[in-house]
Image (cartoon, rainbow, N blue to C red; front, top):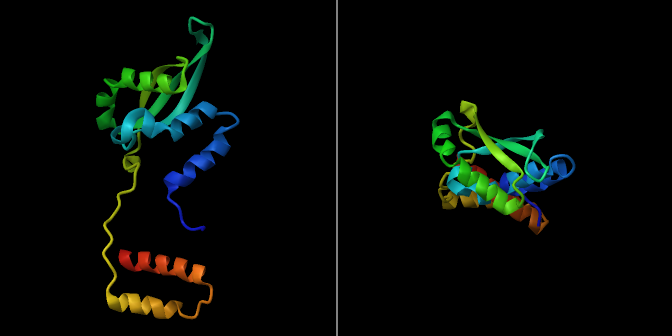
Length: 159
């Protein structure tokens, strides 16, 4: 059954295609961000850039990387104290200590809400249900009729 899906379900599929070539690791960090920092911090932060430092190689001679994390300015100080924990979790999940530094960059004030706030939907009245049902009576395909009914219900609940 096809229908509308949450962005949180669609984005990993889209980012896998985009990041699979050049930015594989950043794509993996983005898709596993909730696992790395936990839901509370994931709502306040967002990984935005991965910078490779070829000149500064680690003890094994491998290039290292630095991760830029966008966060509201008010949370940057608190997150600074959790930087080592975040680094440890990233390197535990992905192996190899290839990320050696984290930098917190300010997030624009209009981006502070990284997760949509879910409003509680009010149930439809019997009159609205009947009105919606009458509008959809002429549609023969039961699957399309059901989808339109759900769409109409969602629209009427938002009003």
